Image 1 (spheres, rainbow, N blue to C red):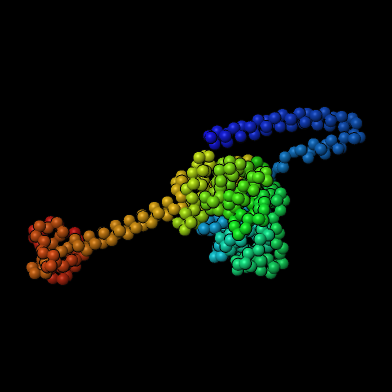
Image 2 (spheres, rainbow, N blue to C red):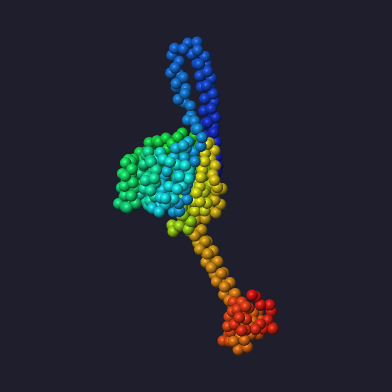
Length: 398
């Protein structure tokens, strides 16, 4: 299937529907104008019609929404800001709390309207306790899935010490962030056994016509449940699940979401091979533009509710984490080998004859037997040792 064509057709269909709605709206406005004129002549009984017309108007945006996919290595942390309001989704590993706090302060965040810990893995909530201690949070959301780990308990202790309340996610519940809407879309079940990733809190953030999808580390089973339950995941920007792992980001899920952009949060040279080549191939086959924190650092998307811009150009490597790590290791090993070779060559470029006390360059035709050779790194070193330059040598290298 030509996914670019499918995407274009979907958007064409949306445009047709919007055009029809626009015509209906114009008709409604004409009717409203007529009714308004009637109301001027006959005021009684007109107030209800006017009220009904205003409720059909789309939500207006008053500025911009920005989404910061913070580069915190192997983990997740995303700051969403909208019209003076701020939200954080995850806070990286245990040693990343201070870094996340510093980033929030650099973006003039003084409090968080919403803080979400998608699930109990350390690379997602490890730094959340530090964030909670440093910022007042109106709403803190984590899955109803207690973990028997110090990382989880640290977050609970921070919530208790700040007299905050832990809120569990409810499918379909919405929160306001300025003019943006944050809708809870996952987890759809608490029956995933020991697979903690599938309990990830998922949200769809809508600002005007722009939509941003976050699913934490949700894997194939959780993705299937979202689709089975009819959850709307259509989006413009998808934060790729589980750092680009092949145990998530299924074809069916990507077809339903069909984003224009995808962001992958992972560490350079990570031990998991993230992102996996299978996922990159799926994204590429659909014409989805990809941004990666392991290659490009912190990624920032800004929307006015219609257009979305980024602080970087899409990645063009399409290389898995394993490939990048292998290439870098080979490059590093090659550089070291070349350096060692150069040092060895430099060391052996001046060869002294222990018997004649003459020194030669390696291209000299009068080199002594190996048992009589002594190596110098330069002519000066040979001369300082009392050796004289062989008259038959070509120019020696200092």
